[in-house]
Length: 290
Image (tube, rainbow, N blue to C red; front, side, top):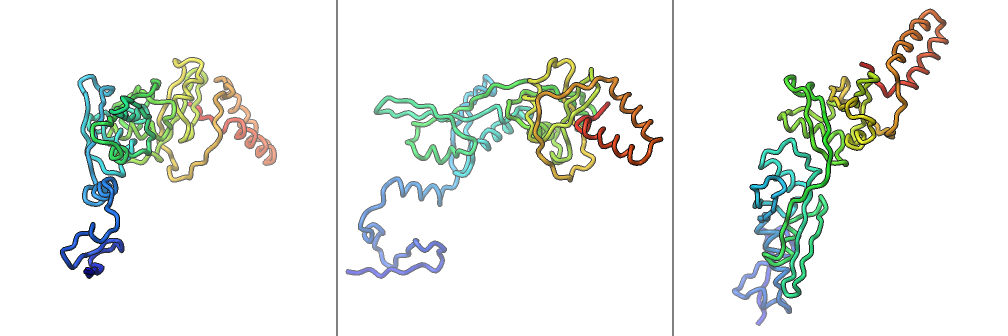
């Protein structure tokens, strides 16, 4: 006997059917739905969130694991940030951490460890394996220590020593400090400068430069440090300029030489003044003198 089937006017999806009789969906479908497809539909529609267990002993020796409630759209990057926020580790660089997934095939006795990308979704990966056959762990990358003078962010602070990764950018570093001080200011309002005390100059770094890579090119870390300054025109668009690890050294006496040239040029003609000022800008546009 045929059963009457009609579309429900209260559903937005065209593939959802409303049965006016007591017949089940399996009696209408020629083939029953597989268990995997039915479970996926249940997770994506009725249960948008799930829990994962992340072993995070690398954060502190007393932390074995942390259970997090996440959605199927949560990325590994967001999981790392959530863990650091829960344990109030605001000075920790998120780029120093990454997630691994250990998958065990019990019948074959094989165990595989996968390094997850930052955009990978742990909840979706966990749903592809039986419960208990997968395990997430927080791992650390090698980094380096940088000293940043940040009195512009907090008047009572002199500097902060931060452990960062070699791929952490200038904007990432400034954002870590802003989060530490609970500041609502934007990253674009500040810039990071490379300061050399012996040669008395400051060089502004591009937002995409990596401070740890810049520091690795220093001859002596005692003569250099990083300084955060507030931008006078923070709304000006930023242009990416090629960063050169080796810059020509400028002795402190060159500053007096530039001042003498400027005094001499003031008594010259306008054409000579234009020529000298354009040459000066071409040679010293990347330097800010103390």
